[in-house]
Length: 185
Image (cartoon, rainbow, N blue to C red; front, top):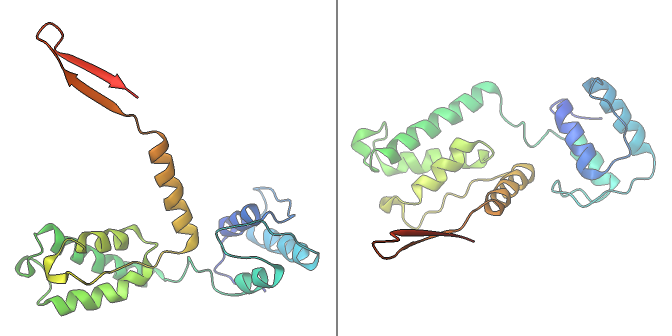
């Protein structure tokens, strides 16, 4: 019933975010946790609001029986995506000049970006999309990466955390006797 691509940590994350009535220990293996989830699903569930966009037991069953959205690539496929991302980042770092990249024309870059933008959970892919926004040859074309809800939640949490710890400093130059005054807000 539970697809094999769901790892132990993914299942624990799911239990915690959905508020499932499953008691587990970190010594439990993946099979033990799967069995405990199956037992919990047989009973009535109250699911908390979550970033998985699962609202009821039927959606949970469908989510668990399907392939894990975070694990869509094999190792070879991920290496291929990473190589393409490296080539595009190199193109961007070289001043968006085709002469210094492996690409012969803009169409090849567009084709590669259309392929890799679906793997937006990979940081290098998100970086490619961000860097290509500054290319004048590609103005008007927006490469928006697809990011799974789990990764998007993590990115949003990091952004909020960064903003909470931002210290505001004002520097004022005054007279020669008191050359610099720092104000912290």
